[in-house]
Amino acid sequence: MIEVYTDGASKGNPGTSGAGVYIKAKEENFEHIFPLGTLSNHEAEFMAVIKALEVCKESFPEEILSLRSDSQIVVNVVDNDYTKNKSFLPYLDKIRELSASFPHFFIKWIPEKNNKNADQLARKAIHMQNENLG
Image (tube, rainbow, N blue to C red; front, side, top):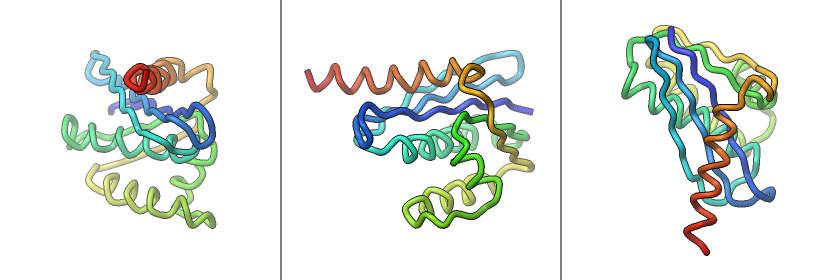
């Protein structure tokens, strides 16, 4: 089983956004940084899950995924496979599509304090974009 920690962040809402993905797999850790451009904080959180699934599909296609996020909205939408918010629907559809390729996919909410690695990666993604603008 692969443990995947995701976090999305935006500076402003909407604003410059980034996603961080931290993966614990087979006694190794992997870090991924994704600059996302201008998104809302919730959109960045959904994109973090999508980016994590894309990475895992390429690197760990046959593994059981246990994904963790500190975004209760994202976890609830994915776990319930439902959202009333029409702007979240394209993200949910993409998550459905990507997660279907794994034998098992679980998502659970974790407190922010337990998601520091992914948070730091998401902030780095924002910082990288701000440096390029300056």
